[in-house]
Length: 448
Image (cartoon, rainbow, N blue to C red; front, side, top):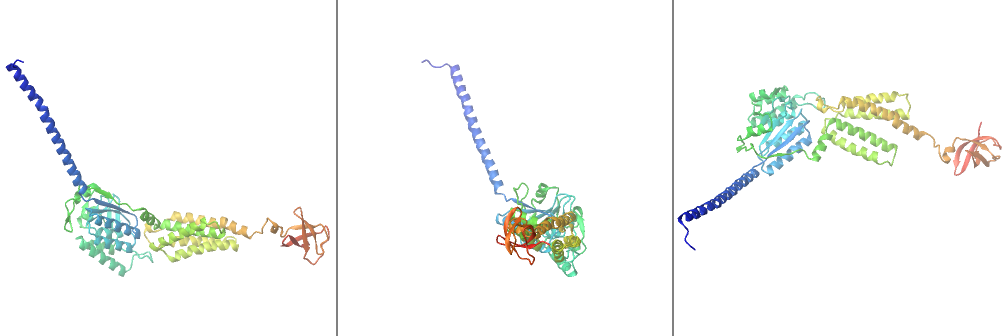
């Protein structure tokens, strides 16, 4: 072959250069894509390795179940080295013993605790004030309030005496001073039921932050130092920690209205079983409801006089069935039942009282229940048997033969062997009445 010309060699060289560029670009693009994937993987690994923020929610009255819930969440957060625990709270208050248990657990926490009074319109009243004071960081949403922490005497339903108040004031002072907050105001909230808004709370150093929502709260918390530990919360993974099934059930049955309904179910079920032995279901339901009601009563500030009045009311209604009093005992029972229901829970706080509507509805239903349903059952038990051979007692019969003293009588269209147990003789065609039954022999006496 002949040698290529100069022009052909230039084209050949240019062709190799052109073909070379795509090879270098493809190599660079592959390296870039690999590097990008590595960066994404590192970022994901970093995000996954960041400690999570645990969030729990406390709504409604504070009780033993709430204390158990708080302890479970804090223990889990400590075990898994959480960045912080945010306690979103909206409570009117609760039981003092449960509040003390929660405060003690919070003071011993090894993980930063943030109490956030939210959403707008929420409050941290009474027990909630103690819980807020015990937090490492306290925050409020706009439109919330805190305070009115004067303890209540469960026996009288009034504000507690000086001894209990002094103890509560000393406790909240110690907690507030430990967390570096305005201890004087917290004591004032106990002694004089002082209550303030979120803006006033921040100005008075009662709380640390005001945040519109959880995201803003986490952003404001980021970088703060708590107990020598820097909070890393902005962009941190959030893990919701709701109540488990057991805690939800126990929390619901400690509601005064639920406890009251359980007590009524127990009364209805046990009486129904006693009236109809062997039904099983009413008795089982009644006993189960009674046990749950007793658990609730052990938690709530129950007035013993109220319980006794309710039982007295039920007893009077039953007595009116057995000893007819033309409705007087039933009326007295309804009054006793209603007053006992009003007095059942000893607390001036609405959230710890039985609903007025529920009391009225239950009183009316219970009165009707005993006046008609139970009354009809008891009256039916007193009626003589109208079927079978015992149903012949008191029935008139016709003598078909002389009874001297034995013979035959016609009863309900059938011939029966009969015996005259009366003093007067019974002749064929005489009317007699059955006074007893001995096997298949009717004991009769001449009808006068």
